[in-house]
Length: 539
Image (cartoon, rainbow, N blue to C red):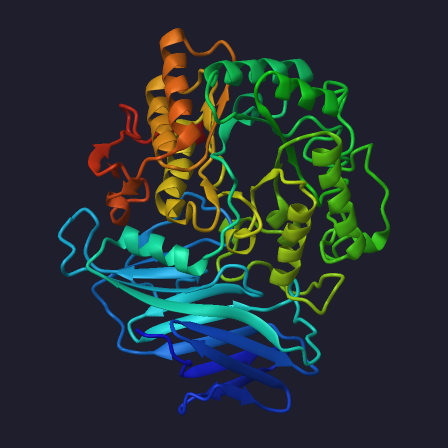
């Protein structure tokens, strides 16, 4: 279907204004609200305001005789949780940001009868967007709330989102989705070099030290010795005084000098990176909680700073300057912000991003505007450092972060978790790689608990996918032959020139078959006992 003004429009505030748009008018208004549209080719920009009521949702409906012999793919608000998938038509299904509707299978290379329709919104909208698809048409919900309450627009005409419809004939569904992601994000903010290296989380899990990070650094530097593109060594959670909590301007007793450590890591032949959780303070009533004014905290959680407050944003800027300019870290991995702001993980966001009944400090901006501004402050004060969002909203950080963790955590101990989370997000979100950001499907966790035969499969897939490759390798676990295989993977990841396309992604949530530079290859994501997720839970 070609883009056009919707047939039905509803702006929901404290009450509800509904417009049956039989004449497809570009401006719909009454004494309480206004919704208007601006058409430009395949693009339709949606504007809305309320005058004396809090704005909550704009609902747009396009009626048409939709196809029935199809499968439908949706995205996720933040990370995937092993649940990204093509499904048959489910009218009640809510699908964030964009959807693809396609017939056939990508396993069939005869594309002569293939048709994929894509519906989405451009990246960096001022609303959270989610779609519904049924046999009579398509519906878009734009969440323009402020937290869980209506936004006090006061007559400000809000540019909610720019809607995009496109059709792709005689190509695979994967190519259609990849091309559509480029259309939604024409100006990505990408690093000047391929990002790869090591992260200590998936073997240390927060139990580390200055000396152990130096040992990790020596290992990744040895594996990448002689490569033109210098690898990263990322210090994850555990360096700060309180676990997963503030303050962020000092290390703990195991990390006495964070600037000195960054200098050592750089001298050993890596680019130093560091993990941070900006908005939490006093998560578990830690003894070193930093004292800040009451108004800094979210209304719904007095342990989380409110990113709409100007002084909180100054605090975020100061932390970022400390990590990069003062200490010299060249990568920031910032974590937990979506959960901290909205109180839900992505898998909780079935219909909306948060529950009702609370507002931000600044009640005049939408949640999406507030989140984007927070991301922009990190970018503007990072002094050129690479930014990896983890538990960030992908559609909002596109163009503001160079990298984004697109799936939930893999594991150094449970192979079934790596196969579920890692493989799923690599297959279903690699279409965003290079278009929205560099899409990080998470680490290879090497502890000895997972067999090398299994981790080798994941290592190869990541290194050849074109996405960032990070490895958490406990020193002393791999033998010389395995270390050589790790080095080969790092070499490939350092320049990332391969084309990696999932084939059976319309049939399974854990695709096994791929095209690697035009040649079909198959991975084995199962042990001899099959999928061991039940065993992992039952232990």
